Image (cartoon, rainbow, N blue to C red; front, side):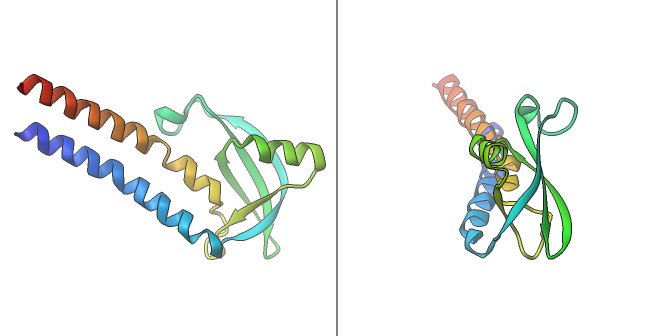
Length: 131
């Protein structure tokens, strides 16, 4: 019976980041569009969640209210191509916290789907063992 409590806790902990991501997406209409000054493709090898270490990401430099900010976000092919082909690209930033960009929120919660998937798989295995 205690294994079901652990699995239930894992599922709840996996749902919390997904709920938060959905809430941030719903708040998108209040985000402000800013032009990207510089865009660099980077790859992390030493820090961050294990699920994201091999994936490329983007480091964007932008100005909001005459201050310069940087934001690391998930790699988006369209943004990368727009910036390098036309020299102009735009991202969304939170007006209350300008260091937070919209697609940064997506990268931070990508691993939650893996967490939920493995929790569900563990639940199925436990049910099969009980039968």
